[in-house]
Length: 226
Image (cartoon, rainbow, N blue to C red; front, side, top):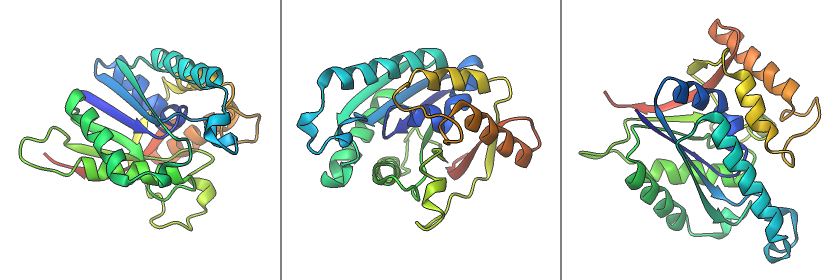
């Protein structure tokens, strides 16, 4: 099976489904990752004020994380960080459409639409638009993931709330996820921040307890065509 993960920023892919990607890769499936925004320039008043070497460094760390996860390929699209609402949605949709044509995935993982982060919501809508079902279309399943420090910090004020109904047992892959997240030194935080190693383990354990296993990642199924 070919799987495509479409995420807004470097680290979203690991936070959202790092354990699941590691498990899929271990099981012999081909995992492709697309990161749409460059992930750093929103920390500056103007995008052009950002140090290009810092952005390049972040992208190199995303490649390291992808290798640790076992992904087959990573594509970086360099859209403006936390400024996707300044772009026509159609332009974002077309990027996703081209990536789907290139990869021909049977399954896609992407953001939940009710996140606090504006880019996450735009990527969510772009993916759903780009993957409209049609005769001969490869995508049969679409799943939404949560991103710690973004999904829960919306406090369910942005409809719809995240309501997972699919859980992937990642008990054998939690530490691989933690190791991949460690590549993102600039994005990690100390406990009790949700992006800390301790919190990520606790989140996996919490969802595991919901699903009856020691550790899990939660997903909301948009559709499955069989």
